[in-house]
Structures are given as structure tokens and as C-alpha cells.
Image (cartoon, rainbow, N blue to C red; front, side, top):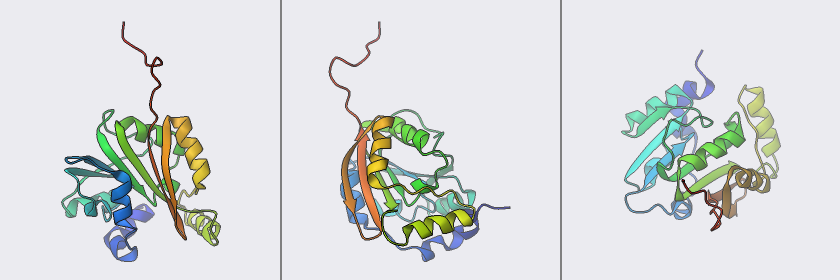
Amino acid sequence: MADPFSRIARYYDRLFGLPDVPALRRLLALPAGGQLLDLGGGTGRISRHVPCAHVVVCDAAAGMVAQARLKGLGACQGAAERLPFADGTYDGILVVDAFHHFCDQQPALREMLRVLQPAGRLVIVEPDIRRPLMPLLSWGERRLGLSSTMLPPALLGQMLAAAGGEVLAVEEGPFSYRLAARPAAIEPGLAVSGA
């Protein structure tokens, strides 16, 4: 039986509107010629609006990946906890309304930071569990068989720090928040040199 997201893939873009795309562009701060990973990006409905040299949509749902490919986007099926990319591949990683569906969030954060360039940006947009009705939405998603662990921004920031990242900004909206992060800088003298 197809997963829930594959079942709705053909209709997904019509069911959900776009977030604040200019804000996402600003937070990503992609360089000219930048490479973007849209992780959990589904059909690529958002990343197709972000100017960059190359975008890859990586999603666990085969139906979503197929829809992204129909739009001419690079796309692959994969799990956030085991990304099929080399270290430092991407200048930016975008995760919109998907992080709460990742089965093992801490390893997913480590993987994102691994495939991100040292000067790259990670932008995560998530429903804000502190807002009214969001706990009910999370409960409803779990009842539908979806993995759904929504985190407040402070806890996500702590998890990012434990994974080797640092939070640059948190922007709160009425129902969700945008968190921008990067790999933490290594302090001089702490870098390991080859012998």
C-alpha cells in the first residue's frame, strides 16, 4: 500500500499554499551558482521558486519524487537520517513543514549539517507547537499513521547545537516559525590537523 504522501502527491500543490518565499530566500542567502537541497520537499512546490543554479528535492515518498521530476527538478527518494550525498555538497538546505515527520530527528540534523557547506545555511520551517490547535494537529497526524513530533524553536535550537550547528535567526509567525542555522564554527586551535 502506498504511503499517505504518495497517495496525495498529484494533488499536493493544490492543497497547500506557499509560505513566505521571499523570507526563505533571504534566510537561505544562497550564493550565485548555489546548490540547494529541498529535504522532505515533496513535489518541489517551494524550491522551484528559489533562484539557484541547481536544486535537488529529496523525499521519502516515491509519489512526491515523481511529481518533482515531472516539474523538471532533480529529485531522489531518500531518508533524512541517511542522505545519499557527499559531505559539503550543498550551499543551502530547505526543510518546510517536513522536519516533524522525520522519524529520527537528531541523526537527521547531523546529516543535514554534514552535507552542508561550512558557510552554508539550513532553513527549517515548522508548525509552532506552542500555538493553539497545533497540539491537536500533531495528534491528528499521528492518528493518521504519520510520524509527527513538533518541537518548539528553543528545543530545535538545542538539538541543532548538539548536532554541531548554530542558530542564526528564529522568525515566528502566527502558526509556524522559520529557523535559520549553519554549521558551528570551529574555534582556532581546536581543528584536528593531519599528521
